Amino acid sequence: MGTFTILLGGDLVRTPRLDSQLAGARVIAADGGIGHARMLGLTPELWVGDFDSVPADLPHDLAAVPRQVFPAEKDKTDGELAIAAALERGATGLVLAGAFGGKRADHAFLHLALAVRLAEAGISVLLTSGAQEGIPLLPGKAGFDYADGTLFSVLGFSDLSGLSVTGAKWPLDHVEVAFGSSLTISNEVKGRLEVALGHGRALLLAHPYPLPES
Image (cartoon, rainbow, N blue to C red; front, side):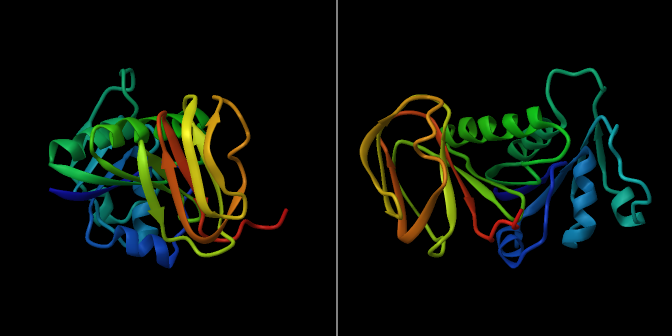
């Protein structure tokens, strides 16, 4: 039982916040996601995938991680298989590290949608790249510990109803948000951020660290 970190193949930067989120978690790597283990100083207990994205020159301790091998032609991604392995081991919480970015936008979208589905099934989920993080929003109220000025968005995966946002530069009070609307994109924390949702599927995407200047 407990929290598992799933190392995925997307972009990942190490930050003090990320270190604290990963502390004490069991670790499973999904194919090329094992490349993040060296940077994070972690040794996974299991390595899952079809192994078509194995990083070159892995240190011996990582190359020797027990493997669960799947064929390249399969009906689930390596990331979903790694998550399934964690759930089989009793995971009640998941940190999906490397869930954004990388070469596959379809995989990134899958991780967002899968996180919402897992949350609806009672699994705590955090998606992170180190620089940004996503948290599924379920009907009800949730509070967040972000500092003033933190950029955040509420991403809707359906029409949303009864959405309220307080502790923000642009608060909302029990609004309806159509699927695909940009109303809830690019807000800023101002005080204690709380989000309440009446009905729908959504995810909070926040940037705890400043975005690089373009």
